[in-house]
Each structure stands twice: as C-alpha cells, then as structure tokens.
Image (cartoon, rainbow, N blue to C red; front, side, top):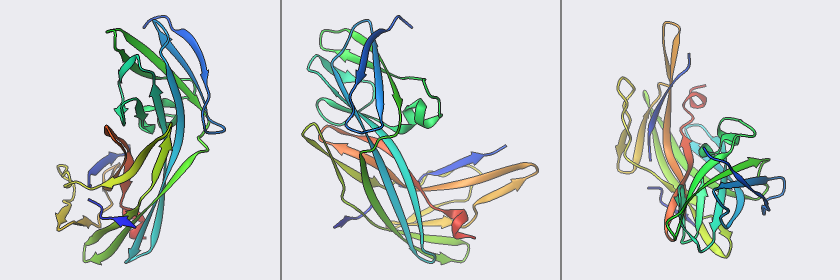
Length: 246
C-alpha cells in the first residue's frame, strides 16, 4: 500500500561552558553503535538508541534510475523529570536528533559531541552532550517511487507514492512519511513549476561562469519521522539531474 506523496526545494551549491559531570555510556539497541553522555550541572534520566533510515528512490519512465540515501537518526527517551529537550519532539517523552545535527555524521568530526539542552519540571536547565561512534545496525528501509518523462528542456516528475514503514521504540510506534511542498525559487536559478501535484524540473544541472561552477540540486521530497506529538525532519531526496542527462 502506498500513500500519495504530498516537496520541492531548489538548493544552490557553489563549488569553488561549564564543567561536565560524567554519566557514562548508555546502551544502544544497535550493535556497533555506542554513545557517551555527559551532563551539567547534574544528571538527567535519558535512554538513547539509534536507527539507520535507508531510503531507496526509484525513477521510472524516461530512464530507470535508483538513488539511495542513508540517514542515521538518534532517539532519546527521557524520564518524568524532563518536560522538554532542544530537538524534535515525537511523543510525550521521545525526541529525535537528525543526522545533520550530529557532528560525527555531518562533518566526520569524531569526538565532537552533540549538545542539547534539557528543561526540567522544577525549572532547572541541564546541558547534555552526546558523543556517538559507529554506525547503527538497526535499520528501517523506505521505498519511494517517481515517474519521469522528458519534455523538451524539462523533466516531468510525478510522485507515485512510498512504502508505509514504521519504527517501534520503547513500546511506541513512529511512522516514516514523505512530504512535498511548493517549490522555493532561487534568484538566477532555473524555475521549477508545480502543477497538479507534478513537478516540472529544468534539465539544466550546472552552469559555468569563469572558474566557478554552479550546480543545481532539485529537492523532490522531504523525509520525516512522525509521532503522536510531532515530527522530526530526517533528510531530503533530490532529483538525479546529472545522471538523467548522461
């Protein structure tokens, strides 16, 4: 069963304090993945695990291509003394940290902690540092399908749907979902049109101005993890413009 995809963003890429108290390692449900948590000025009750979200995107029609994305995501379950954490909230006591917020994954900076703020019911604020290493073995696999037609200097990209996937943690169920939005137009970039749920994507992938190469990345979907209290952004899916033009 698939749901109709409801996101297209055009991204322009130009190439040219305080003493921490050791809490100790928290076990993860994913083998090969470990985390070390420190907090100041005192400990907070947290349980942490991680899941690798694998997204396979099939483009059928004009040229059959499959593009793969992998997004490691950290989940945090807090105790009753914590009423909020400075990241995406999925349920009453479960929060999500996307891969782009984790230095070890986004910038390949091993040993650099992810810093969060925990707000307690008694009004106190605790600074929490989470240092991760390794890659989660626990995975969830999502499949997304698009139909592509070539129409002159443009591609007609029709979202067909995605597989319904769920993540169960600490007895709660969280859903993977895709969203599509009206395209964001960037100055001096080729225009993207959105007509009746279909995206008209330019076939222009890059331009050269002197020694500078400007590449255009056309986002055609946002992946989210959705819980009963909110959703967390996982990552984007892009139209493989250059591969389509090979």
